[in-house]
Image (cartoon, rainbow, N blue to C red; front, side, top):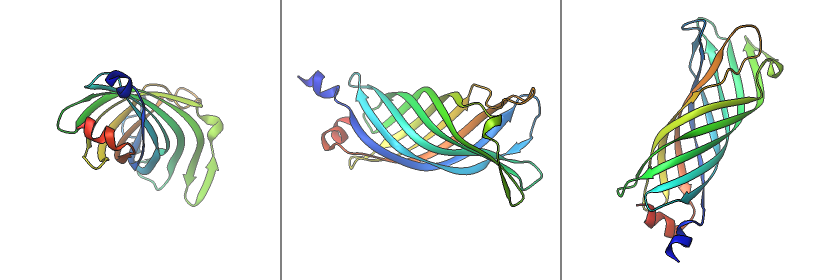
Length: 183
C-alpha cells in the first residue's frame, strides 16, 4: 500500500526568471543575454523513495539581444521539461532530463518596431536540462536549471541558432503529506 501511495502524482506551480541567450555555431559573440520569465505547473511522481519523475509545462519568454545594438529577438515557447530527480534527505534534489519546446511566437525588435518573424523559426526546440532544487517543509521551494538547446531553431540560410537558458524558480507543492516525505 505504501508503494501505491508513492506513485500518486503531486501537483505544484512554479514561476521565475530566465536569463536566455542564443548560440550561433558560425559566429562567436553575436548575441548578449536577455531577461525573461517562465511560469507553469508540474507533477511530481515518486518512482522510488529517492527517485522521482517530474514532468512540467511552462510558458517561457526567451531570446537574446544583438551585441552592439538595442535590437533583440523575443522568442516565446510552451516548454515541456521531463525531469528525473534524485532526492537527498535534506530537501535538496538534483535533476536532469530532456525538454521539448513548442514555439508560439518570435519577434525581432528593431529600435521601436516589432517585426513578426515566427515563419523564420522552427516550431519545435529540443534541449537538455540539468538543475538543483531545494524543497522546504512548508512546500515552498527554490531551484536553478540550465537548459541547453540541441536543435537548430532558425530555418533561414546556414545560420545554426540554439537556445541557452538559465532559470531561477520558486515553486510550491500542494500535498502536505508529500512535503514531509520529500525531505
